[in-house]
Image (cartoon, rainbow over all chains, first blue to last red; front, side, top):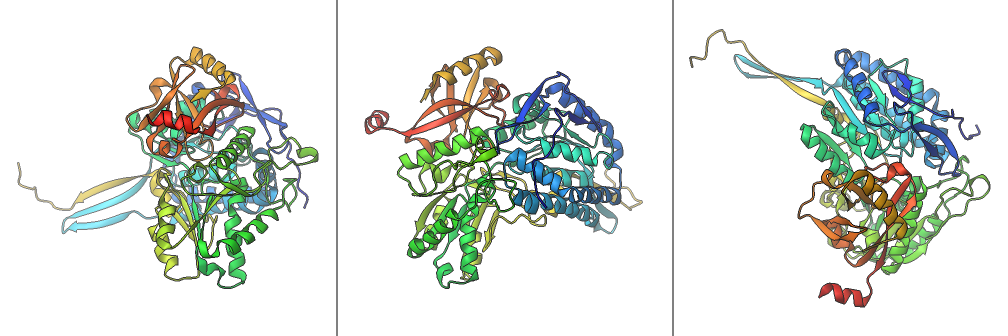
Length: 499
Length: 114
């Protein structure tokens, strides 16, 4: 099947109360594609009036939706999954055009994962139970899970449909109503989602408000009428959202990025076999999704006695990455999501060089041709340096990895943990002791052992340290969207005797 | 620290519209590793925020832990066309503030350490 650019309307509305409505101010912003720099469509430049209308719609739907059975909600989530699956190519083409990522990834990863996440939470909510404890002969404690009410969610642009799904699926499964603001860089697939599922979801249960952080994000995150705020993004905005939530004593979850170490012990080179091949691929995972992943393995730690041989293979594999037409299934690396993102990455490469880092490969723009000559493409880049350099400490969010060596296990752990962040990490070894002990010593929420960049719905994901708190995916995600109602029941017919 | 003329002009416009503002250097995911221009009263500052300097009449802050990795570099605030999804005030205008860094010269280092 051939893939091509999707068709768009001239402009789109917010999705509020089950309908598409224009922004109250009448103002729109232009959304453009990073693949070719061309105009896509106009989206609402919403403000607090639109946010309030969305919260009104969610509040109006809250009573009825919160009382639906887990069975009903599960059926709806399964229907949503089926709808995405039936329209998989359309969703994939849209995220490719909007975000710049190659069609191979949106077709084989982003969109099927979104389908699976809806199915996972459709199942998880039916299996969830409260609990009962007999505290003594006459007292029973019941714990019943209840929805929070109306939740606010702000999602990023790096996996437009999938990050939306990570937040929306568990919130719907648990019976919450939602007001969500997609990233202004990537409003398209979320709008397509609303078009496709609007007859499946009751009006007001899911509301989508487009617009900018200071104008639409802030009134949403600071509203006293929402019961929770979930955010994925950067640290300063994360802190501001927590401040707003503190005024309302609202719970928050934060996913704020990382600088994940990917550690290769010398045993990986013991044999030239399929596993070594997997390790080389694991090292090149820094280029997946153009490096625009919060868990990008952007620091590569290689044991010094295998460094020369290992890095040679990694460089060769990196240089074999296919770039170009994002709609070609053979393309492995697409466009950076925006011009400012592109510019920031080049600026970091420059800073790295000034700090004394050596460019082992890449380090410059990739000039795409034809229709894509005005897009924002970079060559995958490997920098060699040491862990105190800024390119080892700051999230570049591009296809750039900073490599250093380590002597032994102790030094590997020290370097791995010498970072402000603690979201992801990778450990590669043939040693049975290392594959348990090293991950336990790394302060990060997700440590991939002999693999990387796998995101199943059934495994919890989230950060330590400045990477945030709270988890996404997995059964435990349900708790983040639920209250625990405790009923403490006495079967004793006699008074206590106090009064 | 310094600021380009273009960035300075945009800061002036935004000050006229939003009143007193500060810069805070962000880290982390997606739109991170960029300076955020925020209404002064919106962001809680304390001793964990290092005052880096004043550019275009605006105080510039950075989290102390982050500062430890940045302190050997000279920073210039610049602006570029773009679209971010943070809460920074220039975003609705279709611009992003950004930081260009260079290493301090030996002379500057000496001056800083005295």
